[in-house]
Image (cartoon, rainbow, N blue to C red):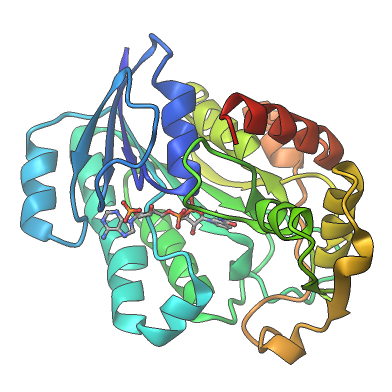
Length: 304
Ligand SMILES: NC(=O)c1ccc[n+]([C@@H]2O[C@H](COP(=O)([O-])OP(=O)(O)OC[C@H]3O[C@@H](n4cnc5c(N)ncnc54)[C@H](OP(=O)(O)O)[C@@H]3O)[C@@H](O)[C@H]2O)c1
């Protein structure tokens, strides 16, 4: 049995990873987050409320456990928040990773770390592979790339999973994402404005949680690209949402990234070459349409 620490367990991905691994007898799960536990599923794992920036509290916590794996999902994930508070962004997204890497080095633990497509400038035109050079444009992207460098220069056993525009649904309704936002607004007959000049390969959160599990099971080491396999504009993704749930697509209007100040700090086009993750992790992405069907079933199961 592996003892696994999941940081940011209240977060979008964190909750999914807890829900996926906690019922599995191969894992003993300890979950930590800054706020009280918001995951309605509170079974088969232990939750601790820990502010990861409180170094004393973190050290006390880590000194009382010996983890085999840390899945580190906690981060400052808002591009705007990182621009507004660069100091906090550095502390959470970079310095904290150094602390966890040092722990993992000392305890021969594996660190599964999450990073982003925003390490790229979006100018390549074809899917990025793990060998492509980074050129982050935002404070968020720079901080996540710096966190990757911390691990690349450490002696810890790490797997970095870079991912793109994550969507899906949890039992906890607190955290929205592109699919839930579009479905929610259109279901209430509210008009929405959607960017038509940014392209992504959106990632189903269930696939990303599964990739974290695969990284643990395969004792993965190095950098991996994890996303969906279909490149689409944000507008095309929202059109598919409207189409799937038979919502009024005339409520959708198109805008440019520049018109909402996103042209400079978000890459124009990102998508990932998934060959390494497929071959080395056994990663299999769900198609976008199939994932909407899963989300529909999960919505009903969560009573939402
Ligand atoms: N979502 C995406 O589209 C996307 C895309 C690319 C990469 N990623 C990466 O994937 C990872 C997970 O993203 P996500 O969307 O699941 O993030 P999220 O929903 O924003 O969750 C992050 C969690 O981190 C926790 N956290 C932040 N500061 C903390 C602190 N000082 N101490 C303890 N916990 C703290 C928060 O906990 P509380 O809620 O308890 O305060 C929050 O729930 C991140 O590394 C992100 O950079 C995400």
